[in-house]
Amino acid sequence: MIDQQGVLFQDLFEKSVEACFSDEKLSTDGGAILLKAADRRMGMLQALNATLSDSRMPGKVDHPLAGLLAQRIYAIALGYPDGNDAARLKEDGMLKMLCDRDPGSHDALGSQPTISRFENGLDARDLLRLGQAYARNILHYQQQSRRSARRPKRILIDLDPTCDPTHGQQQLTLFNGHYDTWCYLPVVVTVSFDGELRKYPLAALLRPGTASAMVGVPSLLRRTVRLIREYFPHTRLYFRADAAYAVPGLLDWLEAEGIRYAISMSSNSKLKDMVQPVMTRVRAAVEASGRTKREYGVWAYQAGSWKTFRMVSYKAEVLAEMGNIKDNARFLVHRLPGNVGSEGAFDFYYGHSDMENTLKSLKDDLAMDRTSCCSFLANQFRLLLTLAAYALMMTVSEHAANEELRRATMGTLRIRLLKIAVRIKSSVRRVLLEFTGHFPWAEDWMACALAIGAVPKG
Image (cartoon, rainbow, N blue to C red; front, side, top):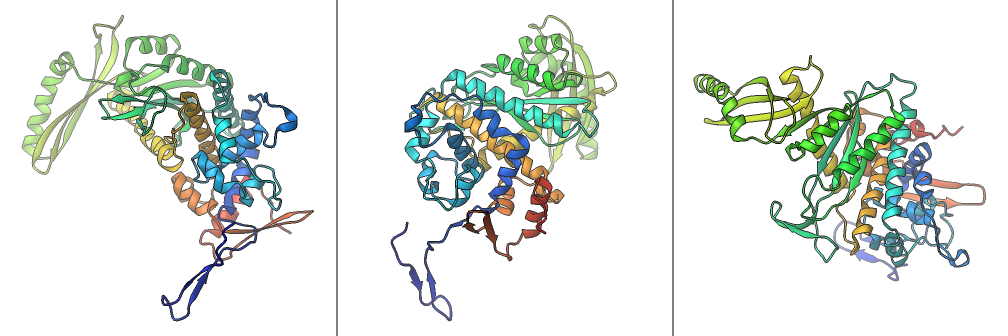
């Protein structure tokens, strides 16, 4: 509790302004009840908690693991990604209510040391079970939510690494010359359905800062594909990734599994020689017209390390920008239906570019890169917590009232639907949340609440 009586601003306005902190049960996160409703629909926290075993002495436990798990996931969703934030949030009424505690009680949530012990208390097997439970929950929820609609014809698996700069003595943080920083290199796997733009993060694997592209990826993809086929056994799978993953072992595995794919390819001298006649023709047309031009085509191509020929499409593009002419040849190895064509193959692959937005949202809006624990495993746990928070927010987003909110970033969603000042009144029979009637997005919030499970008050 703040000891100061308040402060006085005497000369800002015609009247003096006094500011003080109230003893009333107030919170700035009143809209967070939507996260609880989202979890009720998904069963996320229950699924994750079922994998945890508590070896502590029951008589000395004030904070069950289920409560600590909920506290961390909800806090991350609300914009409090650091374990240190628990010191300021342990008395917050809304967060107490989300964690199934009476918001009017003096029963505090987990403190910073308690949260720290929790994050550092899991071993590799615990994390593997948590990751599996998370992925199963996402796929089960998608399976159930799509039962009333047409079964998806294809599921697209996208994989992308990202740089996670570090600023301390974390385990396995190493200097990466490409990114010119000390970092981790986590890799994230998402799934999307048919032509939908929304990507659902299914797994995130933390890796050392100097990890090569394929470190940890084969086993991660095997587990991912196995789980997807368990829930969607008759749906065709597609895979997309950047040029670092156009490696023989992965291509062989994708083909053996019957997974269609489109993977970018780095240029080499042979590919450059093969595309040069087309580039010469396109460049001449651009020089004559002054406008960007491109042509597409496909070859049966076998790299020296490949066991067989594969289809490689090219985009022979010459850019005309502000009087400058620049060659921009691109290559793509793929195994797609025959009617797709070269341009269609590139159009399909370019859907992978939206991974950048997903990673940006995970990092900027939910601080997936707040991997500041000393322990490598604790930082992997933080990745999983972030994915769970992101999943709850995605579920809220799917029930938003308008297209603008459904397509909004998680940061915008948080401001418009979760960050609402609220007065909390707790009695024996009910908890009353009183919002201000002047909240700018009150109608959007009410519509989302009704869509996600609330009922109109009679």
